[in-house]
Structures are given as structure tokens and as C-alpha cells.
Image (cartoon, rainbow over all chains, first blue to last red; front, side, top):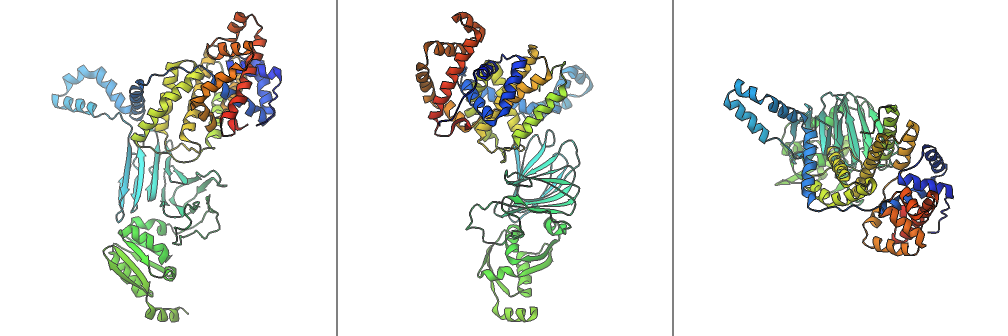
Length: 372
Length: 214
């Protein structure tokens, strides 16, 4: 590259002084002034700094120390994660003689055994609700999570102490315990939701084109993790919902119509806030009665697949357009399919966990007459 | 961090650091989450070169090791909060760079080299504007780099080369070099800059990338 690299001599001296770490205050101001004059100056300067760093004497590093230094790192992590355990430890040292007098051997034994099980290794906790099941989890900070079928949450062992960060793949409903000093953060592939003490639902299945966040109570902050997204940070009020539209990865694959994809938002961005939503439509999956309202069969199928661990195929794509409203209690899948069969021109067949849906032509005539 | 020195208004320095961090962090986005095994592999691969890099900035290996360990501790503890858009490697080099600069700053205030909060801020600001990029890492790790640098140094006038070697490889200070070679400090600096700039141009051709985003 044939770039002009004409740094005036007086400035070049200042640069060397600066890199040597030996620059007088007034010269520092002059250098800073020159750097701010032009972006190109700063780039030139940083290129020179790179070469300077590259040509510093590299200090020899001995390989055998890696393992012992890795242990040091883990000890440091454990000490930060479990400060109260350390506290107990020092207390034990100081008061050891007392304890001998005050308590019986049994209790002392208990204390000693606790000391041995002291965790020193950073660890991740992963909780998965398998397809066909839901699970309710009490988190270490006192918050509660309902994990929907086929979803996973992950957090590390500083959760509830140094942070309240967790990662979600799939759908979960959170009832967060209030703690203003430690924000509760749910991270998904494309968005991050920050809460203090609230109730909200996040739906972020990897196979779906959108991520939907719905707030029931309190306040949450939704942040897009995509750089290009124009509205990166959005605050939600109760009964508001927001959808993030993911960038398409494999355009051919996702054939099912996802809800809200047709909303005017563009890919890789957050949609506008949808106010006054019926939050129970988003959150009732976790309850005894699951409420469905105006959902097309195409949208309903993946929900049923996850909830009942079945595979649903459509003989004709037309039937995906039929819409359903209703309440589902803990009925078996067959009963739900019967209800669908009775109320729409759709027939089903089932073998093992494979379900095929096809058009019921006789019923279709009746159905179209009625609706016309 | 440990850079607070009694005599300065601490607030302004803290604010500055936060401003720099925020600006810097907002440029990175992608979530992280490791298993312990991932973490071990990452550590075993990157700990030695990162120590070398920190050592180049601090000229002190045990301090460098301590600092790199702390960077890994923070990486684990904040893994879900860190957003990375470059490679994880470039991110770690950047963290080590920033931590090393903070450490240097601490040493500067301890040695009472600083008289004003304003200059302290300027010093930090200039250093923190530096960002580690992939082509820098590529050159740093390339086995050919050393041979290339030696070859390039051959092309410099004798005096210029000697000054550069004394400074960069023998760690002599400017004052020591000017005394040893009986030259004025300004001459020494001019020669150092000449050598540095020559190498910059030469190294630029090694990388297939557009080096140092110039």
C-alpha cells in the first residue's frame, strides 16, 4: 500500500517518548492534540505501536507452569464465587479450640467433612426439559423458572452471588426475585433481557424465525445483541410484547409460517412494541390450562410437537391456514386431534408418535357453506 | 482497579475508564458460554502467548502471568455478559492489553511521574485507543516474522540499527543509549523512529490483510 506516512519530526520524537513511557506532561498534551486532529493520525500512531510491541523483547515462558497456573486461576474463581465459605474457614481457624470444648465430636466431624466438599472448580449448571415435558426450577437466587418442552437453561456457579446471568435456548417463563443490586439477565442467541424483579416469558427456539419476549409484571429491558439493529435497547412495560426477527440462516428450510413474521419489521431487528397483549396467550403453556386463540394449524403444529413429543406432517399445505381457538387442559394428544377433526375439515391418522393431517373433503363443503 | 492515587480526583479517572470500556464493549456482540473443558483448552492454548504479550508491555514476567490469570478469571465469571464480535483470541489479547496499560498507569502514579489528573487521562486515552486486530496477531504468531525483521534491520544504516537493537532487544533506556553512543537524546529518538517506521512498512507486506487498518 502506498499510503502517505509523513509524520513531522517533532511529533515522531514525541511518539517515541510516549512509547518509551517517558514523556513530559506538556509533550503528552501536544501528542494528544496531534492525534485528535485527524483519524489518520491515530491509525498511524497505533500501527507504530503495534510494531513497537512486536519488537519488544519477548520474555521466555516455561510450558510446565501451565497446569499449575490453571489451578491458580480456578482457585481465584472459587474464592470469588464462594466468599462465605472462606469466611467459615477463617472462623474455624480462629475458633477451633472453642469448638472442641463446645460441641460434640459428631458436629465437628460434620464441619470437617464440609470442608472437604468445598467446591473449587468453576462449573456450569444446565437444566433441560425434554421434548414432551415441562419443568419448574427454583434458581439459587430464589427466582423461579418454568422451562417449556425441548428448552434448556444454563448458568454458572457464581449465579446468585456475583451475577444472575443465564442462557436460554427455547422457551421459558421467569418469575424473578427482586434484587436491585444484581440484575437478572436472560441471554438468547440474538437478544438479552434484563430484569430486576418481574414476571416475563421469552420464546427463543433455535428453529424458529423470531424471538418473542412478553412481560406480565414489572419492567424489563430488552437488548438486541446484533450490532446492526437500530433500536438496540427497548424497555417493556406490563402486558407489552416485542419480537426480534432473526436473520435467515437457511432460507429453504423454514416453511412453517411463524407468527408475527409478517409484521413490518426487517430481519435482524426488534419489532415495534405490541401493547396490551393478552399475556396468558404467551404464558399459559406453563399452567394447567393452555389457552390458544386464533392460531393457525401451521403455527400450532410445532407447539404440539414439542409439548407431546410427536412429529406432525401435513398432506397439503392449504390446511395450515385453518385457525383454532380453545383451551387445552392436560388432555392426551389424540383428544386434541379429535377436537380439531370435529371443528374443521381436517382428518388425522396417528401411528406411534407420527401424526399426519390431511383434508377432509366431505367436511370442507359444509365448512365453506357455514363460513360464507 | 488499583490505579487510584490519593492526590487525584478519583471520580474523573473512574469515569474515563468506564467511558472507554463502554465504547469498546458496544462494538462487540455474540454470546459466550463455555464448559469447563472448553475453558481448560482455551487456557492451555492461549495462556503462554498472552503472558508473552503482557510481558512485552510490562517487561516483567511474574506480573504478566498474574495479570493474564486475572483476565481468565474475569472471562469465566462474566462469560454470559461479554459480547464478542472479533475472535475470542483477539478479545483476550485486547483484555490483556487494557489490563497491562492499567497496571502501567498504576506504576506511573506510584512513581509520582504524574502531576495532573488531566495528563493522566490523556495518557490512558491514548493507550486505550489501541485495538488489537487479527492481522497484528497473524504477524505476531508467524514464524517468518522474526527472520523478516532481521532481514529488514540489515537494510538500515548501521547507527540506526544499533540504536534500535539496544532499545528493543537489550532494553536500554534512551538516556543509556545516548550516553553509550555519545549522541544527543533527540538524535537517538529520531533514529529509533526511523527504524520503527521502516519495519512498519516492511511488515505491512507480510500480511495478506490490510495491516493495522491503515
